[in-house]
Image (cartoon, rainbow, N blue to C red):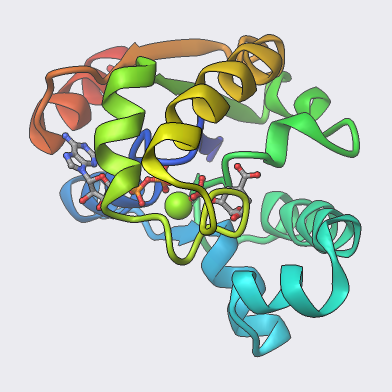
Length: 172
Ligand SMILES: Nc1ncnc2c1ncn2[C@@H]1O[C@H](COP(=O)(O)OP(=O)(O)O)[C@@H](O)[C@H]1O
Ligand SMILES: O=C(O)C1=C[C@@H](OP(=O)(O)O)[C@@H](O)[C@H](O)C1
Ligand SMILES: [Mg+2]
């Protein structure tokens, strides 16, 4: 079976949608960040704080490759930065994967991230004011990587169920 890969900016819903989709189609899922945390026995924030982002990006690449090659989970929720480092974007194309960019506007991302920033080292220390500008610039920089995905699903103003339905429609 092909691996279904969900990607997109922090807060677009990768972890939430991967879990929900998995429950509906009865295909096991794995969240790359959770997989890293479990294997490294450390929270993502701690990995950043203790060893720095470059170390995290190396781990992220290694564990992403491991997940692509395992036979266990066929739905993978990536971290927001995964496609943007270590040529990981090249792994989003090809016959063995179905890659889906969950596309969200700056407004949607901001709304979801203000309430959920503490575990995300890139924004944890930013004020609300700083965050909006940061997200806008960062999303612009990262979009070329996200656009390598084979499919795109817009998530603005959609419930979790509606986004999952859109994904099911494109998989059908
Ligand atoms: N319609 C929605 N779809 C997905 N997530 C949503 C939605 N509405 C609110 N959220 C919330 O947005 C937050 C970010 O979602 P998360 O799955 O952690 O994103 P990601 O893994 O892409 O960073 C979560 O707290 C989630 O509950
Ligand atoms: O965008 C990023 O660079 C990151 C996104 C996070 O995942 P989520 O997108 O699930 O928050 C996590 O991998 C880490 O904090 C770095
Ligand atoms: Mg996530």
